[in-house]
Length: 205
Image 1: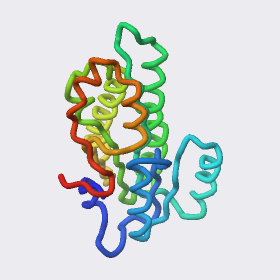
Image 2: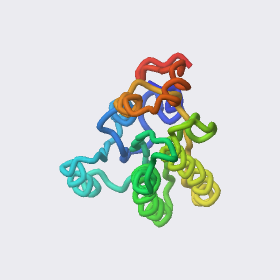
Image 3: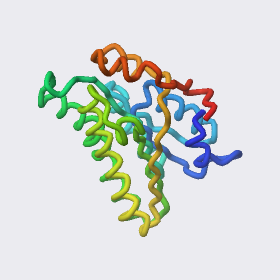
Image 4: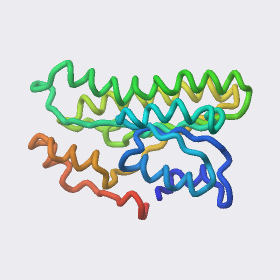
């Protein structure tokens, strides 16, 4: 399991009873579901499957108010700027940024109204946010928006005892990365061929 998240997990019990995780069908989100569940927390899983979304509404009353939110949902479809369309940027922003915001805003407001400690976790991307990689503009812009959102949330919510964490895990072997590789333009493939990839379960960093 990624060391980035070990600080959130008590060795005996997890400090939050109800955790909502987005993008948990595969990859990092799926790994977090298993890890946090084993620590004793109830998990509400969010995915693009309609049946899962129905279960979310039912789980809120069953498990009590959401005390922690982990945003893992993301897409990445590489495209060179001169061969891209507005729709590609819109699609990335809708899922990677606005999709996260749709959960964060109402949950953060409820946390503040309850006057009880809460925790928000956002997942960034070091390469996409901090480097200019040809072919990655739609994804990079959406992940950079997540980074700025995390900083703003931290500044505004921590006075209300709502903790905000922004993590930058390394590239991991997930279905997202595998699909992304298939769509790399030639220049992107050449630049990324030596990228170090970590297994999501056994990370040595």
